[in-house]
Image 1 (cartoon, rainbow, N blue to C red):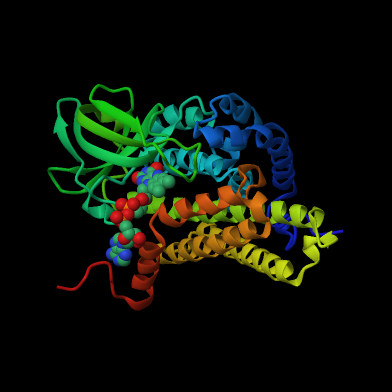
Image 2 (tube, helix red, strand yellow):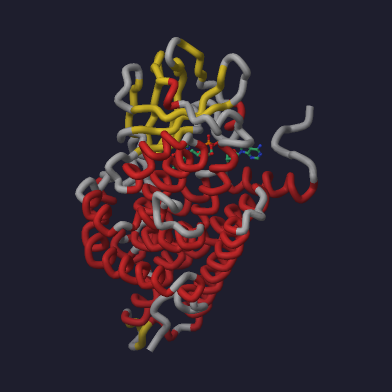
Length: 393
Ligand code: FAD
């Protein structure tokens, strides 16, 4: 007998209510039956699995990924644990979910007016509307606060000009765009209909991680945004954008936790069945040391994710605390994916054994929502009181 799943090892199911945990287990079984057998065909083709949308809608998992009252999400802890289940099957699916729920929906829910929340959040929660969230530009990645996409007041609304890149789900219905108000130089958020005149979106090709996620290069040429699409509580980077980044970086920790669980759960099964030199390869000391490292890292990641989620839910958390967690967790998960990959030998490079997907996908998690370096510097600024982003002149 062997420990067949990482989540139960330190009994993480005990951290959420019995009903929520029952939903999690149902979701896991559903994902293994309905999604796992076909997802890798989409991964191979780098295609978004459109056929899953109605099926996922039926499970109501997005109700758990969206805050009450529109969703059933009671805490970021519950939401994170559910997102990790998606990532345990495919981190692209997990990423689709956090772009849709943790970025787009959360922005409208937290920074929108009551009318915007009523209009959009139920549709987003039910995947009747899907979309993305755009901060990064061609010339401004890590240096996001210098972004140059602009909005200018016009009759009845705003005119948007500029570009965004890497936007996940940027070829779907709507997105939140962060742009500089030319009048006061502040960074503001807007809901943009991707079918508007002047929007041009192209899917980035040849991406080797998170293959099913459609990341887009988008240009805006005199795009008219009606006044009612301005996010009234998103009129300043620190109060608006940064608030959402704190939330979404925390969700990335849970996606990394899901990847690590996926690695452990696949590796333990494989090494217990595969025989070499007449015995299961799990009998070898060298394999066990690697497995112990995978499990220990996974538990550390789950524990850090749990603690910062509790602090978030208690409204006692800083940007630096989340940034350090995101940097640490994705860095440790990189080791987990690498070790898992090598433990499966040649079969470790086949998509279906999960570990190679994990190996590639963790690179994207390590980079998006602020790279490891940038999140370390955000944490470092808080620890020392000194910002070290720019080379001193
Ligand atoms: P750069 O900023 O050019 O950085 C390159 C290297 O320089 C990195 O190693 C970085 O750490 C280092 N570096 C930069 N500045 C410093 C510094 N001050 N000190 C030390 N080192 C530094 N963005 C969105 O807005 N929406 C999305 O949906 C989205 N999805 C994404 C999905 C994927 C798969 C990827 C890869 C990216 C996505 N992004 C998205 C963009 C992502 O947030 C950026 O890629 C990330 O912030 C890094 O920016 P960059 O790629 O321009 O790298």
